[in-house]
Amino acid sequence: MHKVDLEGVAIRGQQIGKKRIRHEFHIKGPNRVLSIDGHDKLLRFGFEIYGAIDAYSRYIVWCYIGISNRTAVSVNKQYLRLLRATLHMPKLIRSDKG
Image (cartoon, rainbow, N blue to C red):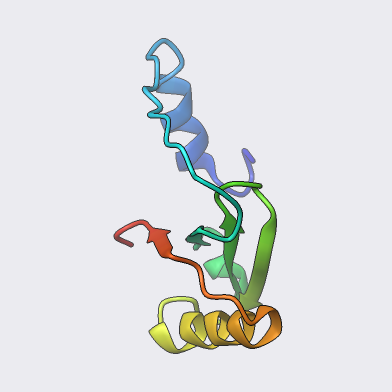
């Protein structure tokens, strides 16, 4: 990580003494909440990663590797593929503001 993400390592090194507050959330069952997030740190190598997990079981629903995850088209396409494959729509989709 020192070679790939020097800034991130430095920031995490400064936060060692600080305690992160994690809030608990309760999910009623599987396939109810889908958590989606992207990883942009590999952009300089020409690809990005986007993924989704089932918040209840922590099962990886999809993992998409492509040249762009910033367009809504690629995310929507992966979501529609999930619906077509499972024939089940989650009640809620969670993601960050990025």
